[in-house]
Image (cartoon, rainbow, N blue to C red):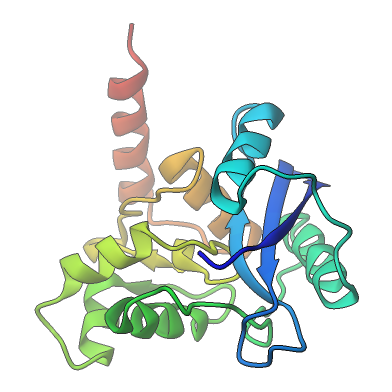
Length: 197
């Protein structure tokens, strides 16, 4: 990753982090290169940003980033925002993943697609698994709304951000998306199995 500045900020879900570079499409304007949803503890969020951006003190966000932070706060309070206009830095991301992220960015809040639908939209109908893998490495969740991409049959599928599938379902609920009862029941069974002593 290009050298990035970062800051931490509180939201209704907990402490988030955002990193930016001056190496987006316009070198004079900052572009987001990393976004961190809340970890289980604030210290873990801080450690993750330190590891990704290189140890250093958090920076004061420039006006554009401060505006994105306010929009993120609103979104996480249940007032869905459209982040498609937010400049992002994907210079170190491969071409297939870039295509997947662009397709995900075009899914409006309150709507979902499946991994297979994204693969078909990219004219690679057999690449649903590769789509899922690319989304699992998404460095800018929420801004690139990978939580809006589900497995077949309306099942939540995976989510690599802290909290896993529970966070994914919560983000969708904030946007007014309720998963089918069968998908929710499957998620609850999975969580019960993974949390049993």
